[in-house]
Length: 120
Image (cartoon, rainbow, N blue to C red):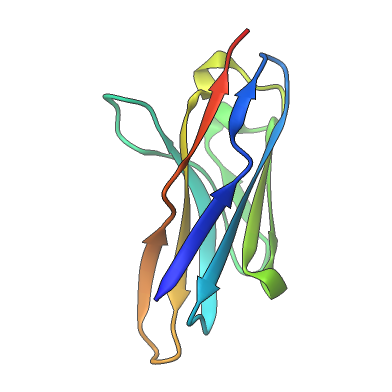
């Protein structure tokens, strides 16, 4: 079994910063893409950013230039640095990972989510 544990959410004022972390643990042979998605009530979950095992990141247009995604493969951990936060960034943020286990099976895992609230 694989678990994704997120941390770093909270309340921040507009223009502020937060850093989210997501650590994958369990019977992991390797991880392909890792990333973050977000969801607000009544809307579909949307992509924020993803990063390959080689460190190539891509971002959704609303966060380009403000968010930076990085990854530590040795720790199976991904970090999302969020700067210049706006009220519209308020959402539950979910970590996602494409994992291969020691049996050779590959599947997608999700974290439980962490709330980010941007408000004055």
